Length: 31
Image (cartoon, rainbow, N blue to C red):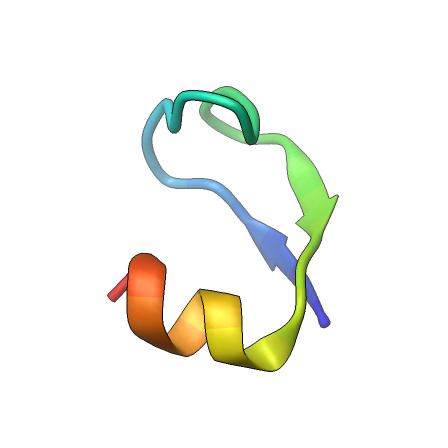
């Protein structure tokens, strides 16, 4: 799953970057 970051997230990326994460990580850690 690819997501666009809306804020800076340590160890993942910065605002506006498109990153690839697993669905579970996106659902649990980023919501």
